[in-house]
Length: 147
Image 1 (cartoon, rainbow, N blue to C red):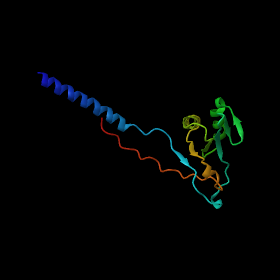
Image 2 (spheres, rainbow, N blue to C red):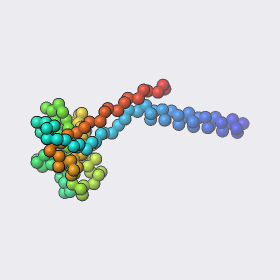
Image 3 (cartoon, rainbow, N blue to C red):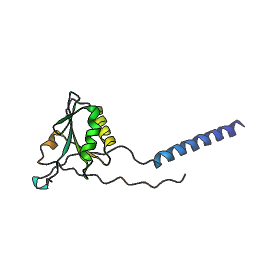
């Protein structure tokens, strides 16, 4: 009797774990891409104006040269990107700014603007004649497993 009960209990646990793994595998990927600016020549420069979000060590934000309060950041980004078809935000952070703060700012920006593409502007990238972003290919959509 005890052996049968143990076998049933183990089978139930395996079944529950299998269902949880199946649900995890069927989820669509979440998160966001962040790319670095790539090398480009001056002949590849376009005529569009870049939008650069700067995060300073004083924990203040600038969009290009305009100071933006943190509570107004989402609204200002929406205003800037509303008329644009190409929605690329370059993010430049002071070296003293924590990674968590940079990711928080990127997350807020992506929450404010749909189809936003974010690229990090590194000190090496700032030396480039223009900022070109090479977009990654889209993630493949995995087939759903039968339930």
